[in-house]
Length: 254
Image 1 (cartoon, rainbow, N blue to C red):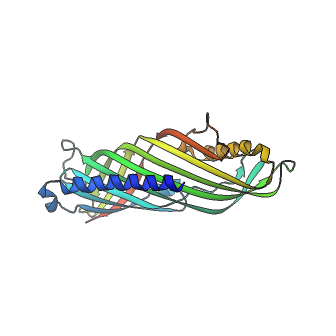
Image 2: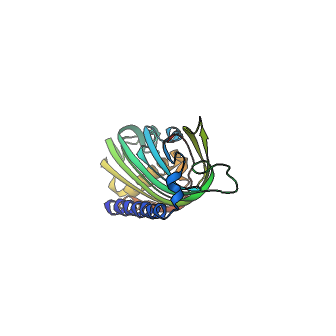
Image 3: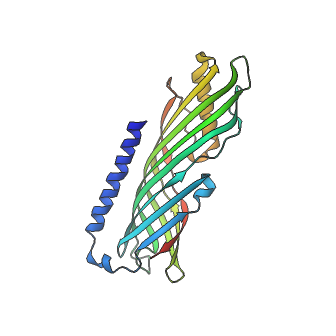
């Protein structure tokens, strides 16, 4: 997991470095841009991840170009219910996670009356999600497990895609509303599950697969990733799928 996390961080760093080079090569008019900076808070994330806090910085580097970076703390919602006929999710002892992404935006010259960062835009983006949850399970069938079990789940997802959105500039250009309308992506998901406690080791993979499917069913944003996939003997599932990106953010422009 450490190698994968390092690789994803390196990927994001390279992407940000390319944005910096592009910004440096932009024309001199960038220095004369009107209020080229925006600090934004992602509001839509509150409906998807609880608790969370995502902060975005966008900088115009030309009359019709900008780049933005977003980072913050996100967690998956709590799970309470029956994970299978054998186990029940009774409690979550800890939840943690984070998200990082970066994009480069091209504001359409013919469609926009105003200069960036205002109007209709498109651009490439890269994102990385990481979640870790520790849960307590209770055995519904005492013949296969006794007492309580501990389930540790980690989910990683690097994504690369293209986005389309529109950003409004309001209140004499002091406030912005950024609507990210579409963001199809190629996504890679890695889920790792670790189950500890007093249970039938011969059925470990079956338990892990049931638990993984339970997690996916409760998080629609991840899609039907386990229809034809199963965790390995180490409790790991590597899955490719189509990802999506959409959000609503409110910002201060200066």
